[in-house]
Figure 1 (cartoon, helix red, strand yellow):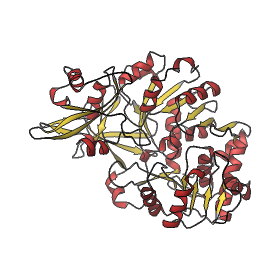
Figure 2 (cartoon, rainbow, N blue to C red):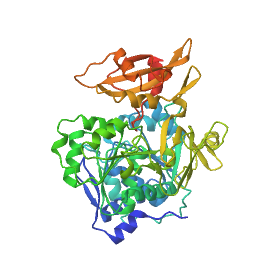
Figure 3 (spheres, one colour):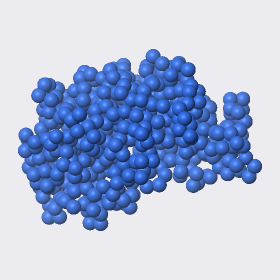
Figure 4 (spheres, rainbow, N blue to C red):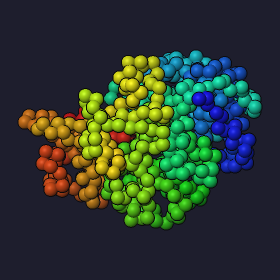
Length: 515
């Protein structure tokens, strides 16, 4: 199948429809304006900077409208957008640049120093383009050191864009590097087909239409910021509001002002919102779909929001799957709290044991995924691709099961499981119990060495403000709720859990500190 220019068609059919709102700058773009700006950027990249189909264009920027303009500009000309996590240290960014070899780097003005260092010391071949500055301090025109101002770059481009090459669903639209919680990050190739099937899968799961308004606060360098629900909303012809960063008061204000209808947050954000003192002052009645992803959502938090008449739908996805695989329906979200639901349309899943045998209901094994949303592989990593994708099935690395009703549960990361006295312990199960303690804000459980039992659990706990908690109280709370071998033998207290941009707890760092 061949890629179709979504923006061009919406610009033809509903040119005046509001497409994109940048909450940081106040810029509002209709589909006609959004399409023209993406056309201009595509033309500039090709005609001025010499970027060709298949060339990489990296972007180092916080959330903004320019991020989506760059994504669709690359789609119009066949270039590949590489998204850079701005939280990474200079050597980490340099590794990614060296790996994907971009021709161009687009960047926020605040990252000028990092961009200059990358261009000087890494593999960037062409001019560096500065994205629209949020403080109005972007350079004008072409500066002496060869940096274009973003708006001037658009002005130099043709509003009609370029002739789009014939792109198939197997061609790569973006390279998103995995979080690298273990080892070096790998560049997942997200194809045009992956974007399309994700738009269909999640779009059907929540009945997205052109009348929907999505508010995105997830990092746009991450699969969630592009695919949940921004990309699918653009596919449907709806409106996307992009926030620069998460702020509870601002998020609630924007929901109320723009009558947001669909939103996805990570559990840490839901936790912060639940503790925000002015939560009940805002009118959130317009939101018909509250979704959660990135990591497990504690059932206790699901129940807490249900008391506010908010039903949170837990989902699951991966960078390698476009990202959506599961999303539980609203009608089942409470009764099946803890479940991620059933696979979205056009996605197959199965659970296998370590020998590759397909397992049945209530049997825990590794989740494998197949469908049009699954990556074609990792950039420059054929061995990693062959290891992860076998006979068309992506091995997720997640331990999972399904119940007698066909609802799936992500038990834990396959690698996070530890063995205590010969028994498998899945930290997520233990964490869900500890989360039920009224004084616990966050918790992560890791396996630490033990002379008799090989490994035992250690709980790393963040206590809610104005609350107090002791190690013995945490351990006692677990008694009678978990098998004895699952109960942590020790507890450490910490102010905040280390997390990736997607909200996943960095258990590697906890193991280094407490293991």
